[in-house]
Image 1: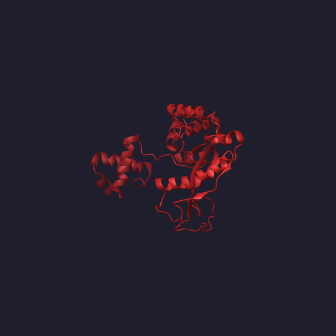
Image 2: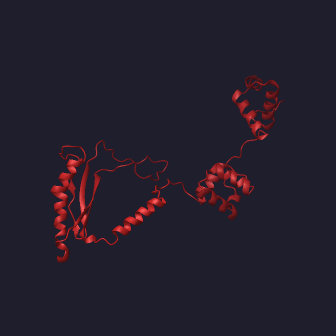
Image 3: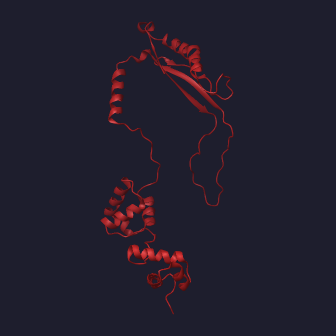
Length: 252
């Protein structure tokens, strides 16, 4: 009786027969398997010199819990390495042979969690110098005579995909209302040392009658002249007497 399919001897027989026949399909017919299986073990033998299975995952090996190995794992994680790369590092530096899935499970349970990287401005040396120059330029500025304005769009319904939550296997996933059209409010306002203005609704607001869908130069100038600047002027009149008649700055 010949070797049982999938055993080590059977795989070696596939490789041996291919060396003599030189055709994947013919060898597959002889052994009652597919050409892809023959090709797989021939390629494995050519790459590793054997036809052994790759290391499989199982319960976390005790060796991963030792302090030296944990330090290697932490260093690899801080370097942003994948589990496959960590397996190679453990084999090379510690002589520890474990599977990729074993490493993943151990790291997830004991060392780290998967998060999306936070976006952070790339502060080059030039950018830092510009920011320092800006701060020095304005550090002695009297903010008692400055009005700072800004705008924001307020969505009056939930936006985005929402947060993840735990759900029992036997329960149905939770649902939230789906909105085809969401009401939004586009508003401008300003703040000073002496108070803040009202919110001034403008173009871009749902149901707001305007000559354009968004804030154009013409719409913005009209908003400044009729609402924002008069409101800021009223706040600046609240300054104490030495400052009340001095010029003030409207910062956009």
